[in-house]
Length: 232
Image (cartoon, rainbow, N blue to C red; front, side, top):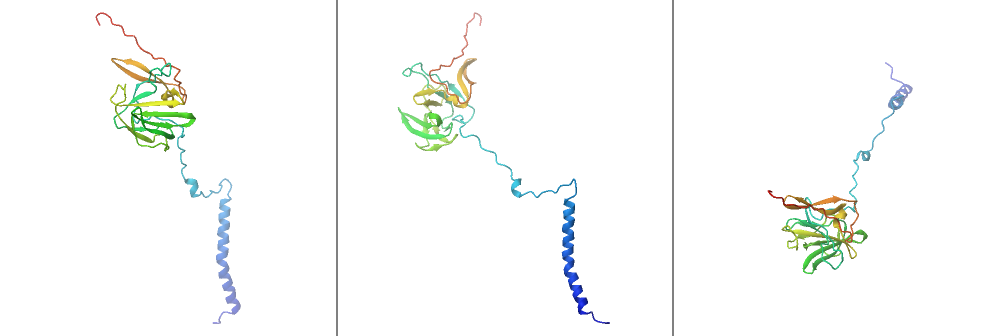
């Protein structure tokens, strides 16, 4: 048997080297043909970042809330005097447990935390020159401290004069020297006295949100006239 010539060996080596390249070209061409079939558009590769769930934006920072947790329990309405020097009720009393956490109704800066006429008061300044006052509160903040809506200001103390409940938070609102109804921060109207049996409950009516009621505007109070009839 004759050994293979040098030319035959060279032809075999070249054929073996070219075979993988030819197969690769054919496979790539087949992939292109499959992707280019009419009516079957190629499916693009989805990057990992596109599969990320979008983050929900937080609530607007200017939204106000109640200064105490739980269902609101207003027990005394805003009743400003007709003249600044006359007696009246320049805020709203909210019944809450002793030691309850008092929170900032909106974002702002603590303006004062200390005693006013012997009563512990915390005052927070908000946008548009508004100030909310809270008493009697054992302060847990310091003046100049920024607070967000719902941030704790301190603990509620007993002893608020005129409170029909065991413990009340007196919540006030001012713009300059003018007293306003703090319920207007929540989009609520003046408190109305509603007779329900022998107990007077307080109901709150809706008004346009964000509108503060000046002290000069005296809200009407709806009352029911009780008549005693013989035999009853």
